[in-house]
Image 1 (cartoon, rainbow, N blue to C red):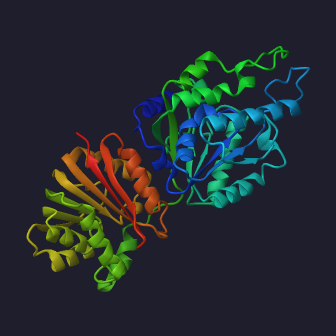
Image 2 (cartoon, rainbow, N blue to C red; image 1 turned 30 degrees about the vertical axis):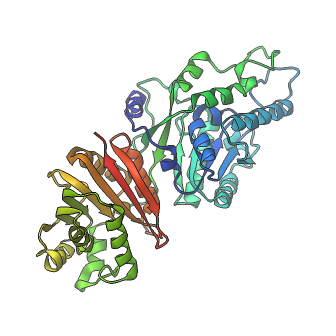
Length: 438
């Protein structure tokens, strides 16, 4: 992808809630140098700290190479100063209680240092200790060797922790020309509203990088004005890297349903019954005319919502033709009930709707399919329509788990759909209710 195209995608990206990207657990931020966390990750750090989620900072280097020409500031002295500046900057972001893992790899040569090969396991253990659900690092096309090393480190950590969300924040990427190729095709950009006052104070704490403190280096390094203007312009970008692996195909469901099997016990298992009752109650007194359920199975939830009067009509859609046949046999005679086969998101109905139900099927899609689903449902929703998400919180054996799938949809739908309620049930599932914005 050309960098200019990537910038256009960033500029048009949804303005997301940082906590939807972090998930229900904590956040670990990888900073190639002291100051990168303040320049590119202030929003994620401040939001996580304010939410009382666990927060960790991995300092790849101590930044001792920033003023190599100074006769009075040795590398150890610079490193000590920059560590102190980083701690002060984190305090400005409300993150003074964040745990810090210092890798102390050499500034400018972290990727080739002896300690780099073992760094991923150290960071993975750090993430596990903090209960992190997201890891934030720089992208591989951030043009600095330590930033590229941080990108590689993030990828290695995700290989050890496949369920952690790998998020990327750009720092020096804007040095690319519009015609430069960057490996961004698979990434999903989001914009975040930056806490500008706190971010400005945090960046100012890095005095050595702003032309202060060290005055006898002939190169007199300082962060350029154009660079600071860009990063203090009001928003930050975060890129969601796809979760590793692929969702199962149609044959997976054919095997599960073969011979009339009720693999998940949807007909009478306490979990399934409780989930249907909770979903119906979650809508409250809201009523609509036409509903659609994606991944309807045998139609028990659709029938429950019809019976509760939430909608007068309900169209259920599922990938497997045999389960649709069973849905028609079991619930097809209910007034207002219809069921048909279809693959999401390609076969999303053309009819407008008042209620969209996505129950325990979202994590069988990948990120591009969820983003496509958001586009389609946003076009077909009537004003004030509701979207009800139901997601299992246990192991799903899919790249996206229930939390990640719901959070990715919420972030992708931001600006078009407004979150109304979200609840994690002790029964082991999560409910989210969204409203179509005017």
